[in-house]
Image 1 (cartoon, rainbow, N blue to C red):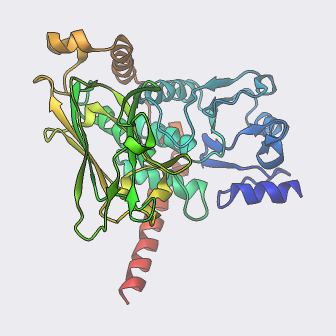
Image 2 (image 1 turned 30 degrees about the vertical axis):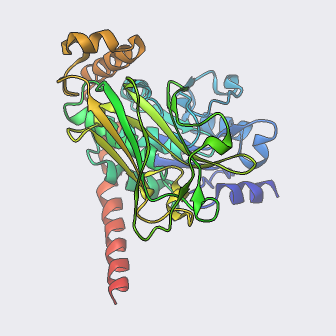
Image 3 (image 1 turned 180 degrees about the vertical axis):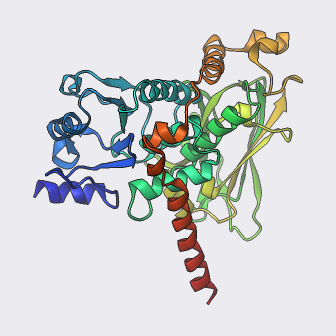
Amino acid sequence: MINFLREKVSGSKIRYNKQGFNLDLSYITPRIIAMSLPGEGIHKVYRNSINSVSKFLKENHDGKFKIFNLSGIRYDYEKFSNNVLEYSWDDHFPPSIDLLFRACQDIHYWLCKDVENVIAVNCLAGKGRTGTLICCYMIFCGRFESPEQVLEYYKMKRFHIGGGVTQPSQIRYIKYFASILFSQIRSPLIVQLDKINIKTASHALGLTTKPIFSLKSNNKIIYTNKKSSRDRQTTLHDLWFQETLYEIDTIQGELFLQGDIQGFLNHWGLLKLKKHCRFTFNTAFIDNSMELHFSKSQLDPDIFKNSKNFHESFEIILNFKQFCQCKSSMYPKDRCNKCKMLFNQSELEKWVIIKETIDDRIKQDPKIILFKYLENDDVDETLNKLYEEYEVISDENAE
């Protein structure tokens, strides 16, 4: 009965059903394991039992495993000989960009140290956060350069159908990670937020909505258009057919942004606030247009794209003012004096860590790092199989 419940909760994920085990656990490669939380108390009823996970790892990789716990939930690490590192961040969100580099550095050092070493990554369900870190590491070690391909590979190895990393902001940060690693992104821009616009308004209350937009930096609200009472909040009435562009706010004064920023769009309902969508971005990736556009499919949660309360052309548009002539291709130490004065110390430290992590990356054959033996590398085979399936589906749809 318990195994049935666990299998229902894990859904379409590939489980480990060998050696008498039935675990929500998948070998992404022979040296990288994705799994759900090793559960204690109520969690063990529908997640992996911590005792079963401990037994599995000791029987198959005794003394050669290290766990990366992303969940923010601490479990009994002594059952794993304390070989657990914590890199937690909020469920369904991406982490700060430096966390991905710090975690990848620790994974890389462990796997390069001994060809027998393996890592196991868990969040809560072993899906999005777990996949975000694993995808970034498979890019970091050098086996993948394309975020799109590594996302497909992870999905094929972790899920029977569907699944994978599905939250748009987590996907965005995997792409950010690759851009920093392979291109010339070396620091975030400092920008001034100028305007917040939306294209079409939601039908949250009939054909109307009272939109509340807010921004957070380091978990602190740095901007909101929320009024002191509901009756003072602006009401938008939209029939959609004109695809109207609405100005939510023009920022008065100087609102400087740098680094990782979270945005939230809510509706002030009759009884409470109703969450609509959210997004996360990093100011290092604002281009020369000084605009960011987030379409319906680029907003979190991933099911938002199916919302019937929003038109298909819905967008959130942020307009910025350029603070200075510095570029994100410059190291923080090379930025102008105005930048240096406004840079948060914690933000500077993040990008110093990122630079040092990239500079100190150990060079080893990524096929050995991931697969132990060259002949185990099935990346091309797996992706070719996927592309063939896409072609079949495309041909069937064409008919």
